[in-house]
Amino acid sequence: MLQPRPPTPLGLLALCLCPLIGCSDDAPPPASGTEGTTSSTTTDDPPPAVDSTTAGIPDPGIPIVPGVGIGDLMIGDRGDRLMMLAGEPDSTFRFGNVALLTFDAPALEVLLAAPEGQELTATSKVLSVGALLSDDVEFSGPAVPGQRQNAILDESGPPTESIDDADFYDTGWSVVYTASGFAKSVTVFPPYTLAADPPAMTPISE
Amino acid sequence: MNTRRTTLLAGVLSSLLLPAPTQAAIEVDGQPLPVVDMHLHPGNYATMNPNGKAFILGAVPPFLRGHAPALLDASLDSYEEHMGIQAETDAAGVDHAVLYAVYTHHTTGYFSNEELLVALDDPRNDGWAWGFASINLDDVADDPAMLDARLDAMRSYLEVRPDLFIGIKLAHAHQGVALDDEASFQVYELAAELGVPVLLHTGFSPFPNTQDQPEYYDPGHLQDIVTMFDGMNGPRVDFVFSHVGQGDARSVEAALMLAESSDNVWLEISALGRPLILDEQGEMSDSDEDQYIFVLGEILARNLVDRTLYASDGPQLSGFVRTYLGEMVEGMQQAGFSTADIAAVLADNFYAVYDRAVP
Image (cartoon, rainbow over the protein chains, first blue to last red):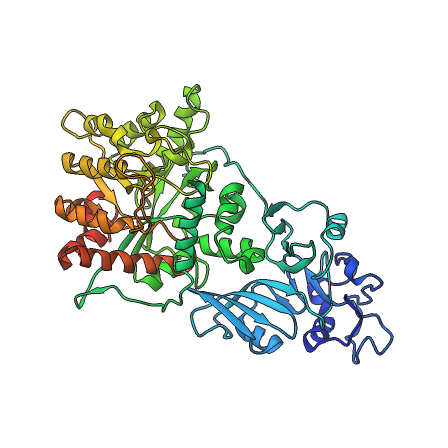
């Protein structure tokens, strides 16, 4: 399903800036969907000047980094940077000051906090980023769109929480599955620590 | 009943998906009116109850589900840019907010007094919000020492920071404690001693695990307590019935009747944008009318306008604070409230009962 192909513009940018988001020795292992590919980029590597696939270097795919971002797009980025990286969205779903933007070419969806009409400006803020199933874009990470659920569970272990068709991992990522058990999207957001019971009540510190 | 409750919440959430212009000012009959939204819940995704979380996520569009931790954290944050509670109240034209500590970890989740202090003491507050302290009522029935320690802890916030903590919030149906429970009684005694009102969740809640027997939600069960603390036979406590007993026509009537008969009872009109679940006989209601239409009409008819307080029970999802305020103002106008009546409900009555709050 996920065959090697020339990287998209966002993919190339991601490869260039991989060290900024830890896509090297510390990066999560490649997902089974990208079997056979490994990250050849380290913090000392020069940015690839040419298409890495045609140069004989396996394309690791756009890195999905839990709690941080996808490719070059980081949680906390502003709308103007999103615009620079991904261009205009192909679709926008809004409610109040929240917008879910979908970008078909890089196969991403981005949750933004933004006043109406200011999605792609310096005032809006990226809250989370999702990688979507696509024939044209390849991702790498703890899970990738199109990957089987049992393969993801084998590699990453049980999720922190499961709600309906979504599994959530407290290190800052989630997977939404199709009814047939394939990853439909993989989303990254800030990590969290579940704390179901309240702490002991303490008096105010004077 | 659970299916119906889910449907109701889904309907409420669906209504939030309409585009909403921001920076609306509240203007009624050409007159700008100050607004206090006295029922807002800060929180965290990580401290939400798992079943409550699943309930909420079941009602948001499926394509947002993978983003839930980011979406809910940002929505429940007091100061998140553009969509935190302060941003939502600003966009709605709300001047002041009251944020709640809650110990409702069996149903929705918790937000401790300590966390609330951090939010209220933030430089970004700057007079925007006050808070209600709360108490964890788990396991105190057989442990008086634990209850005393928790009462002392709650008391400290109300005593040390009266500029920030202006009242107490309890949610019996969520906390699994009857309205007239002994532990609650000690909370009422503390409120009397400190001179702060107690806001009580009354009526149903759509969240799983909420107690749905009348002794947990029907303010009729507070008749004796209200009398005991009416200030004529001892110390006084002002009781604010949040949601006016919503969901069950019998508890709505009890709330209205107690407000008519006792001047220490106040009616807070959040969460009324949904139909009744049970009718006057306790049978499933077939009404599809939002409850605020009946409730606001009765408030006016029974001369209870000066005992009525505006609140939204937000933030829920972005846009809700603004949408609910618009619904209630329109509802009051349609019910026949004068502009002065509406001004009283939106802010003036709040300052009458919460005298620690200085606008």
